[in-house]
Picture 1 (cartoon, each protein chain N blue to C red):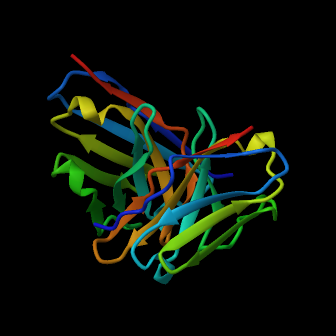
Picture 2 (picture 1 turned 135 degrees about the vertical axis):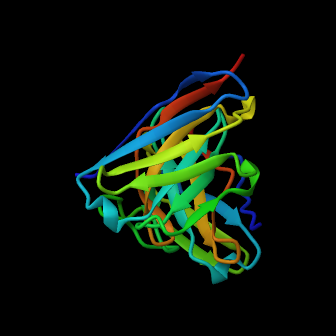
Length: 108
Length: 117
């Protein structure tokens, strides 16, 4: 089945830009969604269909997807952005929903 | 306001069964497909199963090997997960979640299942 690969951790200083990648075979041909999960809480959708933001998600959160890599970008990082982030897609060949392994974003 | 509330978690011995429930409110439940997603302690999210809005189609993660069954009762706004032959590695928080085509747009707060002798 389809595999999504994320780095286990990313660290960034406050006010800087964090980029979290999600790798997969020709992932640019698929729609990728991103979820934020803060400690002890349920996940929250932060990016849908590669680059769209649900209502309530700030403009400094953005996404892109091309080739073999999808990327979640958070600019002007704040302490409140510290969380685990997961990419997800639907694999049409298997009718399975697939999650990446997750990336822990640490704000230094 | 969409609310998904899971129940039925607890401590169970290996090899035993458990049924989880999820009660939905704030939505027309019968319009939406639903998922179960789990998370082992300190680990990432793992998709478990999905069911179509009318219950006509069901999909499962390959790792479950037929031990789990997803079902729903639209008259009661409830989603279920029947878990049989439980293993220690099934321990984790189980989330009920609403399907929006190819993504998940709402999540419950989860119910903890602990499989231990």
